[in-house]
Image 1 (cartoon, helix red, strand yellow):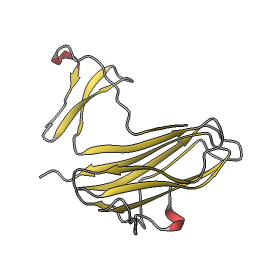
Image 2 (image 1 turned 45 degrees about the vertical axis):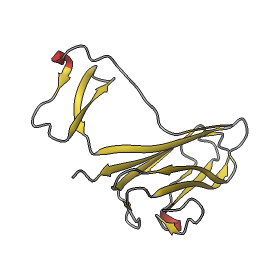
Image 3 (image 1 turned 180 degrees about the vertical axis):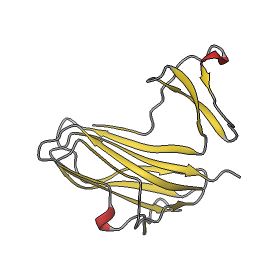
Image 4 (image 1 turned 90 degrees about the vertical axis):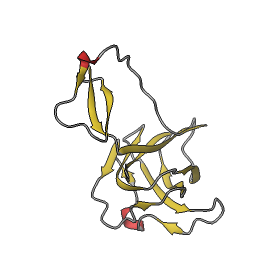
Length: 164
C-alpha cells in the first residue's frame, strides 16, 4: 500500500515571452498551464493539501495521514477522486489539533463530510457547515470513515493562505 502527500509538476521557464500576466500580479505566483502551454499568474495565496492511498486490495477504514500546516489559512473547498465508479462508496473525515495524540476538533459535520457514492469524483466549494479556519501549526488528521469497492483514492483540500 502506498501513501503520499503532495504532487509536483514542473515545466521549464526559459524567458518571459511565455508568461501570461494580464493585469496586476501582486501576491500572485506563476504556474505552468499544460492546457495553454503558458505560464500564468495565479493567486499565490491558494494552495492544496492532499493525500492519496493506493492499495492492491480495497482501501481500509481508519486514519491515513497527518499534515501539519505551517501557516494560517482557510479551507475553501475539497475534491475527492477514486479509481472506480461501480458500486463504490468512500467518506473522509478531517480533524485538527495542536497535539498529535488528541484529535477532538472536527472540521465538518457528519452529513457534510467529503464522500463519493457511485461516482468517479466529487467536490464541494460551498462548505456550509464547516469550521474552515486552520491556525498556524495545527495538525490535520485525514481518516477514511467508510470505503467499499475503492482501491485508489486522491483527496485535495483547497486552502487560501492568510497573507500578511
